[in-house]
Length: 415
Ligand SMILES: Nc1ncnc2c1ncn2[C@@H]1O[C@H](COP(=O)(O)OP(=O)(O)OP(=O)(O)O)[C@@H](O)[C@H]1O
Image (cartoon, rainbow, N blue to C red; front, side, top):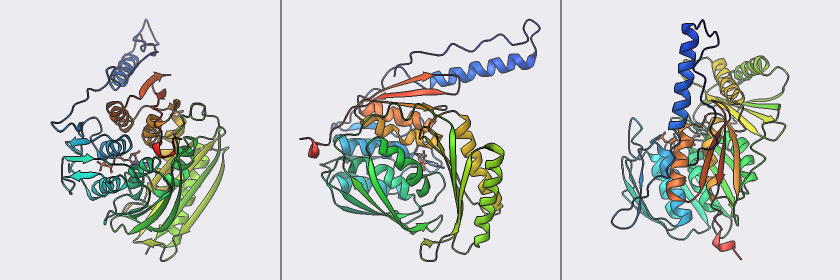
C-alpha cells in the first residue's frame, strides 16, 4: 500500500511554549501516538500470498478484525475470481471463534451460486476450504434458522451475482434488524443508492421482519448482473452540506406503538440540538401484524448532503433501556459520522471496499478514520487481487481512500 503523501508529523512543542504546561505536553504526545497508530495501520508491503499443498490460497481469518467479514469477503472474491481458498483461524478475534449459523449459511449460499465445493463448513468449524465453480443465475434460498443477519447474507452473495449470466433472486431468512450488522433499512436506504453509483443494481422486497432472538424474517432480493462495476471518483469525495435528515422509528410484536413515537420524539430533539437548520422528516410506526416475527424496537436516521452523500446512524432497543435512549443513540451515531467530515459513515466505509476492488478505474472516498473493518477488507482485497489502495491523510482524523480497481469483467456479458 502506498503511503504518499503523508501528513506532516504533529508538533511536539506545546502552544504555551516556552512556558510549557503539562496539559499541552500530554496533548501533543497523545497526537503523536494517534499519528503513529494510523501509520502502523497501513502496511507498505502487499501481504504475502501463501498456498496449501492443493494449491488453495490460504486466508488467515485471525488478522486485524478477525471476524466474519474476512470470511464473507474472501469467499466472495473466491467465487467471483475463481480462486480456491482455505480459510484458517476463522473468527479467532471473537469470544466464540469458528463459524456461527449466519456465516455457515452465507458460505453455503456462495457455494451454491457457483456450484462450489465446500469442506468442513459446520457451526464451530475454525477452518474451511472452498473450490469455486462457474457463477450461475437462478433462485437461491438461504435460511440462518436464527436471528443471523439477512443483510450479511446479502453482503456476501450480491457481489457474486453481479457476475452471473442473468437476473437472480435470493430468498433469505433470518434477522432483518439485528445488532452488529446493517439493519435492512440501512442496506436499502444507504448501501443500495451508493452501490448504484458503482453500477450495482438490486431490489429488495421485505416480506417479513425478524428480530433477535427469534429471527424468522424474510427478504427477497432481485439481483441484476453487470458487465463491469465502475469506479466512483467524484461522488464520494465531496462532502457538501447536510440538506435533509430522515428517520424511521419502529416497534413490532407485543410492544405498543407509543414507544415508537417516544423514539421519534427523542430523535427530533437530538436532531434539533445537533443539526438545528436541517430539514427533518420522520416516520414512526408499528409493524403490521404478520409483517414481523417477534418483538423489536429501533430506529435508523439517514442524512443526505448536497452532493448526494448518505450517512447513517441506527440503534435497537435494549431490555430495561428507555425508548428515548434508542432515538438518542441513533442520532449520536449519525452525529459522529457527520463530525468525521467524511462522505461515508464508519459502516459504509468497509462495505464499499469489495466494490472498489472489483471496479474498473479509480474510486476515491473521503473518510473519517479508517476503521479496523476497512483495514481488514483492504488486507483481504490486496491478498487476493492486484487492486491498489492508497491512503492520503488530510488531517489526523480524515483521509482520502483511493483504490485502483481490477476492472473485473462479467465473462457472460463480455461481448
Ligand atoms: N450499525 C450498523 N450499521 C450498518 N452496518 C453495520 C452496523 N454494525 C455493523 N455493520 C456492518 O456489519 C458488518 C459486520 O462484520 P463483522 O465481521 O464484525 O460481523 P460478523 O460477520 O457478524 O462476524 P462476527 O460475529 O465475527 O463479528 C460490517 O460490514 C459492518 O460495517
